[in-house]
Image (cartoon, rainbow, N blue to C red):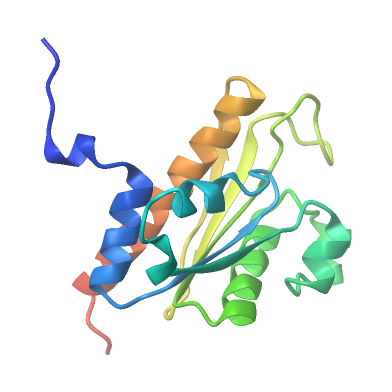
Length: 171
């Protein structure tokens, strides 16, 4: 027997957009690994324009540096498949768009390794008014599954940050 709930009937992108709308907050994305899939999942929800301000697909390192402001030193020392790069991408997207929050994705979806890192190595960063976390993930599956799971994890990380921020008063 299948169980159903209101939470399961609403997609994660819709839940995220509702959460942002209720807080008069906005969102931007900076994507490498996900190639625009994260922005697409958000903009597929009717009314997304009320909170989603835009995104950058920065597949090439040069775009990460020139558009998102990822420091050259990050690219040359730790690489684009790194927590440092993801965090810089998120900060850059937030700065570029003026959004309240930004999500960034970078990593290796396959078919082969990149920068000596295996397929499934993923970094997701969230940036908000008080900063935010960067997650290191080790995902498995096909290229498509890794991309989809990365989008889901990014959205969940944003929801967690918003809820954690509300529970921790400014001090």
